[in-house]
Length: 218
Ligand code: SF4
Image (cartoon, rainbow, N blue to C red; front, side, top):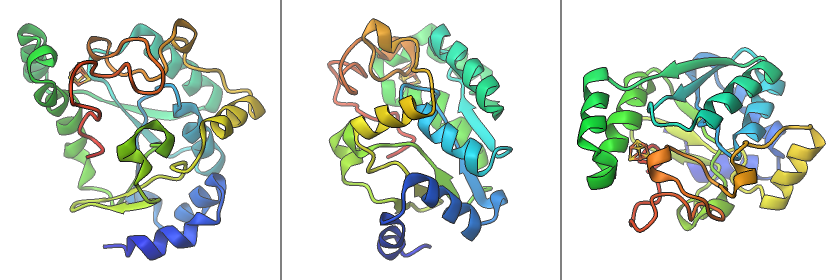
């Protein structure tokens, strides 16, 4: 397992693009997993990948409960950045169960586990490093994360963890990246339509529940 503190310190003085370049220089592409939710801040990391490793697979977890605007945004970014997007889906019978049971309203952890965590778990063991676009500005849990975050089965890598909201906006502007279409309607964080309402930051996710993360990042 990677010595996370030393590794994070070594990457701290680098900018996000340099961190991505360094990671792809240090590790085999075969060992690097990249996922994207095609949410409101996803374009930055996707653009960095496009610059550093353009053909690298981008896994998208299709819970079957995404807004049509998210699917459209995915298609737009895929075309713009020529992304190699691979869609992962939950097991059909389990997904059907969550639809009929409306599991998101009774036990959202179980719903996320079936529709997000399990499909990714099936491929996660093939990789050593998982690149993810979490940002510290998004919530308290994310604020305390380091660039390298070793877990039992994989080490997570957050190249934009210390990017501020204004830096993120400046990056989007500099490279002409369009924002998620739901931002204009007041959604600042976008997940499944059952569990997302309008709101600043991540306040519109799993409203009135203690849940703040889907389980992929815990
Ligand atoms: S975010 Fe909501 S609908 Fe989507 S998988 Fe999780 S609980 Fe289910």
